[in-house]
Length: 301
Length: 302
Image (cartoon, rainbow over all chains, first blue to last red; front, side, top):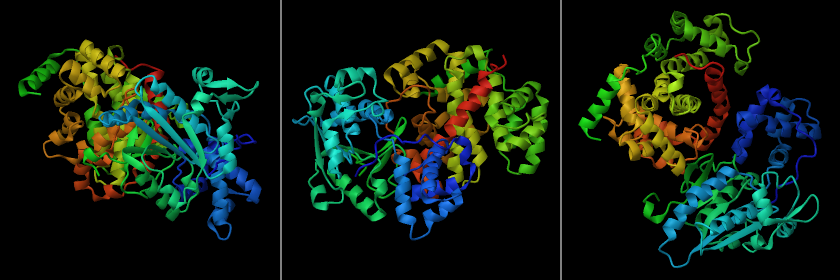
């Protein structure tokens, strides 16, 4: 599954004052209901931006007109999908969610390392499911390389990065990114893990790429999903929002099986599982949430 | 903690001369705001606030700030109540009152951080109660607002010891309560309880102050300390903690407090915790602005 990763060509059209129309809250609730994506009050203008662009496309004059198109057949499903595309535009970049990375390095890794300390194989497996053009996968790889100098000394780290779209996978493999994609990347990481391609682009260094295996995978292909075993961490950000309830539930159940006991599943920063799987425990870390498959000795299964 | 140690903390808190005097309007205000008849409360709130010039002036100043975006700054407390709504005025009032009680120069902990957490927790307690259709929503708000007053006591009575606890918490990224235990041998729960008793707060509020971290030790495993405990955890995970990163994983549903609360409120099972978390984020900005307005422009009176 691929999400458009380029920045919006047009500047935002809404500001915080434009979202007073209560219809935007109705649209927010509808989007949450079908996709699990929640735009908080202070981010509502982003939703209004997306609606504004779609309204121009479909010729809706008012938010109310647009609401009708979002809720009435036959346009309903297609239009919702288009809107989801709009509101997730530009969300992909390297180091997109620092709270997720902090949780990973400061809380989760020490926990997993602590649990696995008695095992002879020191191996960590991470899956970036719906990796798009690779930004998340490389971010994880760079962070793991940092940890290999600390907590993960002597450990083998494998990152599997999959996407439905062949072209995205090829782009991901190349690992070349422009200014927009590295806008959250610090100079420390840029210097350590990238080489300049030209004035505007950076390429990920081979030692980072070595950690990752990119491949094409359809998350709805049950037989292939069964083989993705032994994961410690699964990241699947802004992918499941496009799935209907039944497919989403099936994929999430696969993820639960794919994870080791004590493993974690991360969604995008404003996404929710909405109780589609009752076996996962919702856990909070500072600034982020994740879903946890309790470890066997935690007594919480 | 043994009984004699608790008694010695209580004695020390009682004897300290610098111990904050409770503002005259505070207790009647708390009592009033725990009631439910909105129409009588408005006039009564106005009367009480007007009684204390400093509180009234601070309340008007906050109400006139750009935060609330009123076209005309309110000229009277009643106008402020009408323009802003009773709930917002309550929040402003209680914050002003509490700010008055504690000398601005005595803080070890950043007062803005403390108030953001206390107001955040109050708000989450209220929202949580509303979701559970609990009868005493306002009481939950008060409990959230006051649950950590022990930190204020620590700043005043045990400044050096508490500074060491904070240093440890910041350095090791552990919960402040754990750091207090490690360095001082007691926590803000004991010192807060001593102050609450001195102030003669309601027993339920004292119970929350004393047991919001160890709900099981509450006399009857009451739902109110459980509610505050969960709200406190949620605040600390969503940017309304004590201003540093806590290496902490919070599994609310597996927390013993959840079970306590569930026994009282079956509705808890149906609460969408993720959405609730996202909704909390919406309040963070307003709380931060309120606290900067109350404490930023003019420091609390000494």
